[in-house]
Image (cartoon, rainbow, N blue to C red; front, side, top):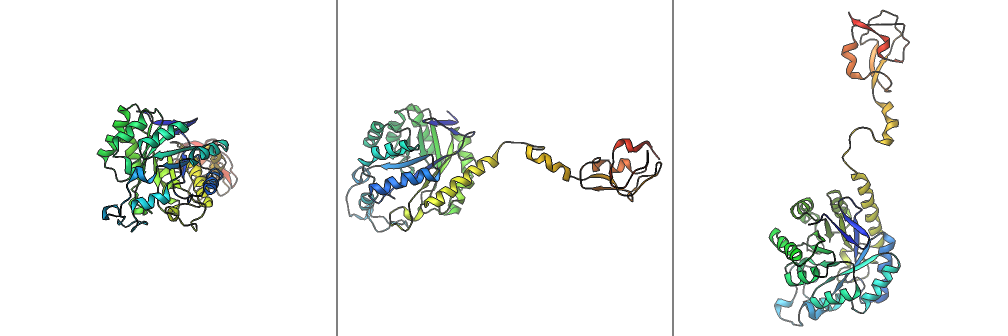
Length: 354
């Protein structure tokens, strides 16, 4: 059990910067140059990694027009067969080593979701720095065990999974040798609605499994991943497209580059704001202490004159005694003449109260 993972030289966990992943998925539209542009856009937007999906239609399903192979569950893809959708959405395998080289040259990580054992072997030949388990594959224990045996960090999406299914996946991965596991809170609807996200699950997952927890987000906009970070998410995965005007299976719920950049900037701001548990005056607050209230003499006083609410008041600035001493001072006498606008101090007050 480890509360952090390391992808290449990046420490990912509670005390480290959020690791931000741009999911390319099918947004390349079978155009290699477009895929390259998305990799560059991810880097420019501030992502730490880009992620691919490694499958072919025949490793996910079979070509069939039978009703059970036709999508009809209220998704963006209703009416299509699984084979038809995956034929459009898959990323050609010959592209993937080239995209990894390009990503590494510009200083961004690249890894992928493997959907079957041959994909794991292929990605190992590419020497990816981590493996990703999709939400739909969390129940494929043999696939998870094969990924775990590589010794690479394992990121597991948990969409639709019960706590028991997550436990089985994590334990199976550990038994197969995985020492670095992260979980992603995910809602597997496309697009997902904010009210379906249940982000309070994030700290619960972290406590239950003792691993870094992040979010794989399919909602529209950037509010949900930013909120997830405030709740402790260490990883954020979000789809990236060059433009939602470019049609594609995933385009409508993906971020455009300027939106992705805004999300990254907001996440980095949230990281700074979260800080640590602290009370008292911070460095930049020191100059503001003067705006606190304190006790001042507000009328000229002669030595021996009694302090009262007529001549002492709690006002700004904070150069005098604390207002908490007001009751103690009332009824005492001035030790000397005091000019109006003088901050009250103990040397101006007689020792004895009348």
